[in-house]
Amino acid sequence: MKIKVIVTLKNGVLDPQGKAIQQTLNGMGFSEVNQVRQGKYFDIEVGETDENEAKFKVDEMCKKLLANLVIEDYKIL
Amino acid sequence: MKIKVIVTLKNGVLDPQGKAIQQTLNGMGFSEVNQVRQGKYFDIEVGETDENEAKFKVDEMCKKLLANLVIEDYKIL
Image (cartoon, rainbow over all chains, first blue to last red; front, side, top):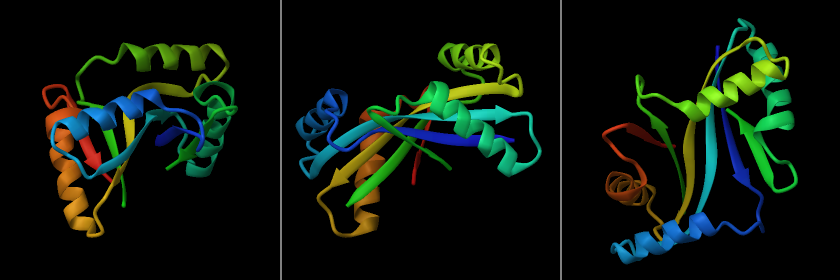
């Protein structure tokens, strides 16, 4: 079973990479772009047939490895 | 209006970073993880009130900057 996870920086945490992308887009003529925030995406293939069980496992992985909860939030899709 | 984009490696393109994460998870006791693929996530704040217009703009940004279409796919959420 494939579980998708998105890890994003918390609001208020500076995102220089996103800022650089925004400035580049503005410079390319996309002047309507006001802000870009970049995050990470994970596609995790878990050997579980039960969706809830798989999501529970992935939640643990997020807490232990994939996300730094001090500065990041995660969302399991 | 905020538009979310996910950029992933195409199937068949090697993902050493995902592989490293998978091996780390396995080593941490998550032995049921068979594969991990990592991608990028963007939260783009576009100064457009019309959703279709905003998505059209973001589609152009993906083609021109955010995704490398030779090895990556993108999905606008």
